[in-house]
Image (cartoon, rainbow, N blue to C red; front, side, top):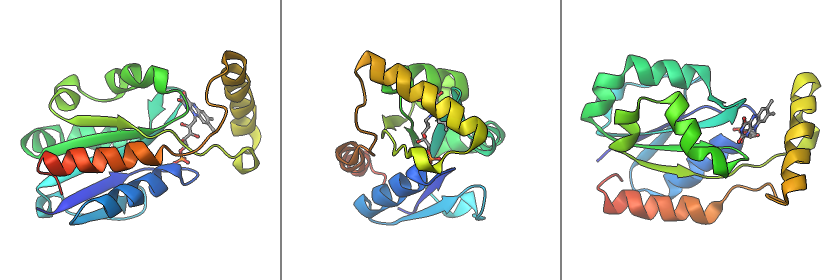
Amino acid sequence: MATAIIYATVHGSTEKAAKLLADELENAKTFDINRESFDLNEYDAVIIGSYVRMGLFDKTVRKFVLRYYPVLMKKKTAFFMCSLMKENEEKYWRNNFPPQLTEKSKTAHFGCEFKRENFRGFEKRVAKSVIKRNDEKGIYPEYELDREAIVRFGKELIKDGIS
Ligand SMILES: Cc1cc2nc3c(=O)[nH]c(=O)nc-3n(C[C@H](O)[C@H](O)[C@H](O)COP(=O)(O)O)c2cc1C
């Protein structure tokens, strides 16, 4: 079964996660939705991954999911997000994707890398406040992709017939 992993990234975490997940699967190709083209008809299974900013997934990802909702409902699908706040995961799914789609799909949160030196201007201010809030709560002292979660998700997807 051919699988497309379609992702959006700003600073590279989600791209890295998409490629690590592809390595766990048998016949998966990755596509940056904002830079590469692909034909959904060529794939029986579609995995979509996005970063989260201010509670929202990438705009192109959100538009794509709404536009191709009927097609995606008929395919095997799975979704992942890369973000800092795992505790908000359910809220992010709810606010960004139609529930029918996430209910029929496996979903995962892969954490993210969060490199202060990447950020400029507005990003820098938001990053500072997010980190401060998390540090104060004593959560996420390390900002790394959750590689175990990626491997685990890959295994679950293979079991589910996505590979
Ligand atoms: C401006 C900005 C806003 C962010 N907002 C959120 C947020 O609302 N929730 C969250 O969990 N993480 C948030 N993050 C963390 C990002 O989700 C994280 O940096 C993400 O993995 C980046 O993915 P990328 O490296 O693929 O661009 C934010 C980061 C930035 C820079």
